[in-house]
Length: 305
Length: 125
Image 1 (cartoon, rainbow over the protein chains, first blue to last red):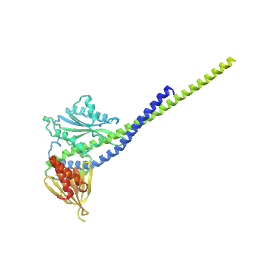
Image 2 (cartoon, each protein chain N blue to C red):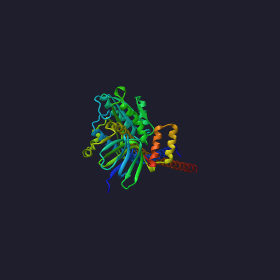
Image 3 (cartoon, rainbow over the protein chains, first blue to last red):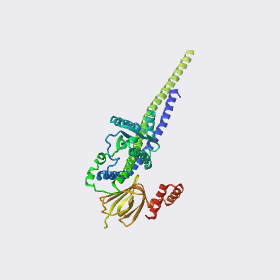
Image 4 (tube, rainbow over the protein chains, first blue to last red):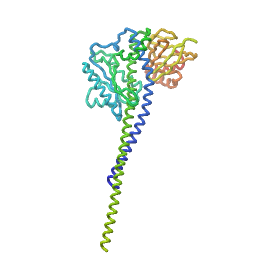
């Protein structure tokens, strides 16, 4: 076998092996999207009921609560960025990071100090490499988050919000995650969790609220209910964000692996063509060598006669 | 037909039970509360404890609920809990083991959780 042909054969073998791996990853990611989507759906009754309750308290009572009132001159804002633990998911993590960068720029332009919290190894790595300060980070659960994980993430954030600004507390809480729009589309979004902007929370529900709006009887009192409700609300929103991000991560990985598989196929095809051409050239050369040799031999014997 | 209210018992990661009921008894921070159809709109903080739902078919559903809220409006009652388990989902042996372990480790919160589970199975308040 000719040297060139051997090189082509070797490359085809290695690309085929890579293709098998990416194909497997694509299939795993595809099966996990369904699971992740099911989890998002399973968590939504709790989230909707909780949002309804929060809206009811916030609109149905005149209670002032540090978590619902806008501070006049906010000086510090917390940003929670949700990325993935593993790569090979196309632009998934970097899109979320870019969105967070944009948000950070905007908040800084408004004169606020930004404190960053990160979920996922990719985000931690990005910030670590640029030696940007990170208040706290969590890793190890981005592809299958549980409610306990969300609670773990929410705890220091809620604590930071309840703390007085002068003692290092934050006035606002933003979250950057990747919204799962469909199998093909996942878009990074930023969202302000606190203080509650009832405008955004109730815009879609305002029609329903107009007929609803009952005068609630609070047990034990509106303040206590709100006190207990808001941390749960933040946890549930973070849980939802984690679940959506997980679904988006799997969808992004599936797409990235699908195009990798397609590219590998393409590469195998063109390499096979090249290998065929090389083999053909080799055969042609051998034939012409044989023919050339035979005629030379014939000439030699004819000359000796 | 007796008056009914619609009950949704949801945990953070799933919907646990939903259906029609005639009476729901739950424990709020200020004491046990019973909600019947036509109750005034209510929003309360739940204590960890068993929740009893008397269904319109005459049966009783008991669930162990760990923290959460009760909200009632328009004859719709929602019980929101971070963790909620129906009594027939609870593994008695596991709960007993958890109780033992909590006692030896003097973990008050875990002990209380296990106790509520067992009480929900036994159907006592």
